[in-house]
Image (cartoon, rainbow, N blue to C red; front, side, top):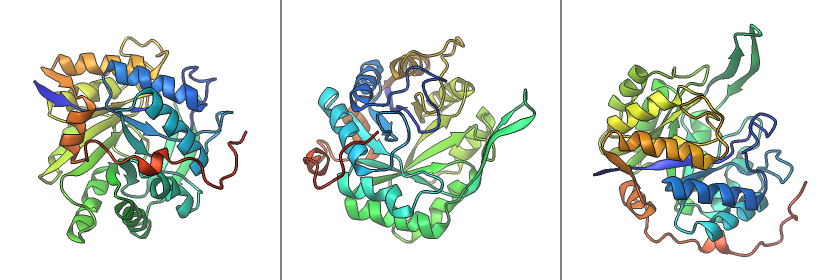
Length: 302
């Protein structure tokens, strides 16, 4: 059987428990959610850090505490840190990567309008410009390379896929390049299978890719990616709802649904050791930096 890597995005930064009670805030809650995701078939966890009160944190302290708790609970998981943010200084978007050296680091590949529209209200719920100029992409990429962290190239539209090519030519990205094709954000590619397959057809060989579907359209995209040889990401950052329309009680519920969809295509959820091989990662990983005790850092806040 062909292996399919399942990534679980545990929390994101935008939603809170008023919207979905299963979102983790504290390190021990992240650890429990990671364990549920691992048991259901995930081999990678994507982490946005939060303070214990649920507000977003970009500090190394929270990333360290959350990741150490996850590794204690599910030691074979592949760790992926976010670098995406609006209005946060560039150095603060990457210092968790350089200090803690996870195996993967998310790297947004272009600028875009980033919005959410309510047809009921006939208004935008939020409306941002997500700026990622080449100068900043190259800065983040160089920092990842110095830390020995593999970039995960997040592409919200076809132009972002093309933005990867000069970075390969400059020698800043090495094969196999890992792409995340993100569909369903207003301002980016729509969440339909034709667009997904077109974006996948644009990728150079060799490369690996996963789909990230935003909202309940995610499940069609998961099935399409699995049937097309891609990998998948699910989790409470991207979508709260199961294919039935019921709200998920945990990330494990979403990963279990993705695993079932993958199995219906004749594939299976990849074990972490297999996922590392497919992604070109070291097995076992070097976790020296992640497991170091806290240095002269401010105590965990809020």
